[in-house]
Length: 137
Image (tube, rainbow, N blue to C red; front, side, top):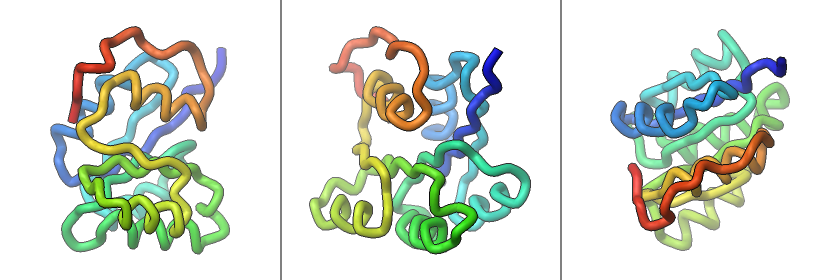
């Protein structure tokens, strides 16, 4: 049996982190929540995740700053990062990719969008069959 992939979900809204964890709770992933940017670096000292799902707009240290620090450090630069945010402006999308984001997803999102985004980086079975019209987050 293949070991579970670890996903660090970073969002200052605990409900969003719980929702993402529920969507991805298929036995293949270990979901670790973090509720602020600084907590990412504490978690990284404990365990290196296989993927980070990162909100942009957070107090104290926003997602862009977290992303910049992750991609600047050789030990974390290769961890794929999905920005999952309500920040829809094109300049934010460009900034995210310029700073090294691997994927950009807007809130609200569907469970199928999230699962497919995660599978781009972690592989795995087929996406859950859910209506694309069912927004989440």
